[in-house]
Length: 141
Image (cartoon, rainbow, N blue to C red; front, top):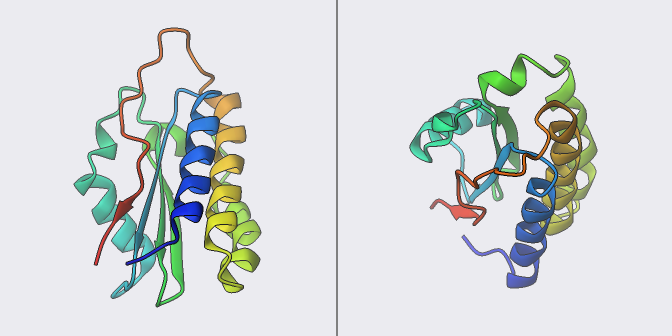
């Protein structure tokens, strides 16, 4: 799975900027193919990446299967209990046009920034906040 380095840097910067405003943890996982439903794949990855282990249950995974053109956004229990039901769908709808045009860096960065804006209101950044999960992008086959 290859995403251009400048796109990876753009996404990583969006994650780091978003996490300066929130105690929430945002990860992006990119792979080529997704067999089955992308939300189910994101659920597996969420646990594989240890995202369920944050103190406030405020991790978010943005998942993209590039070649299959599937993606999902999955938030932990702490977030789902504090955001409107249509929250994830709204952000997915905003990302979709960019991803459809293969503007992967811009589409994922936009989604990450929007997630960060909302998380900042529900889980504001704390002075003693620890970065519980790496900001680095993860890649599958």
